[in-house]
Length: 327
Image (tube, rainbow, N blue to C red; front, side, top):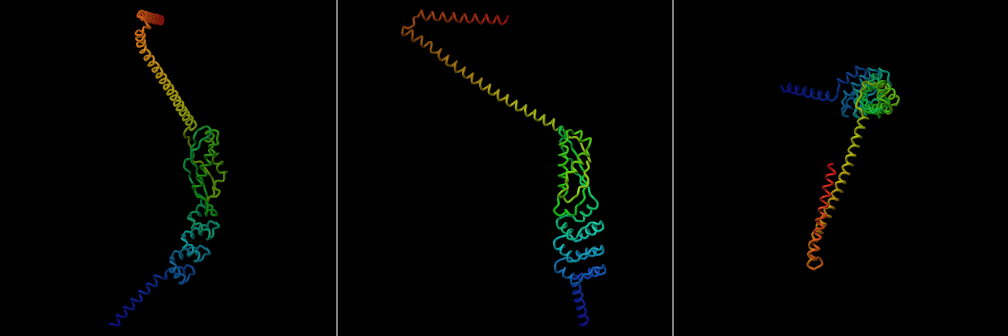
């Protein structure tokens, strides 16, 4: 009985040890690689484990590359994996490039992948060009009419310029700039509407794909519309601004006139105050002259008679003037 227990314990220990070994050493993956024609040793797989590399991320792409006839080794794939690249996508891109007879080396494909671009999609776009559609771009012709155009740009990926080349945003910006320049140089918006291909030809000859990751194959105007009359709006705005300036100047002149008028009124009032003050001194002077004997009583009455006669003449003159105005 103790011997049986010892045998069971031994079998359990052996099973556990084998499980640990098999979990650390991917024997199944080695067998798959061996029968797929990939020569890779158990020691290499163990080394991948020690370097914290998942062997399946290297072996499975290596099997695909071998079956496709690519001459690669695990060291290159492992180095790309450790650099943070997507090994499987790079291998798919190399296979697609080989089938399309595109000259693409592993080093360039790895550099494109590490640069943050989708290398497989780049190969696919190089084989099958894609269309980039710009938003509606507003431009103004010389006659002041706004023209709104939308373009479709057919591009093909340029493998040689994928690393360091500008992307789709640059293509869209340059095409928009070309549309604005072409429409802006047109004498009339009617000419642009009659010949929209003029925009395509002019923009296409500018070499807008220089320094980008794409090669422009064609630029087609998908839609073109008439917008606002910018010239008339600018003239209206200018007229409104001139009107406000004239109103401001008129208000300034009116304020100055009012100020002058108020100044004159104040001056007249001051003069009247002085006259009243002077008239108030007359009785005092006459009283003083009477007391001092410089003015007699008869002289005073004669002066009053003269004043009364003067007032009467003024009243008669006013009545005569009123009658003449009525006639």
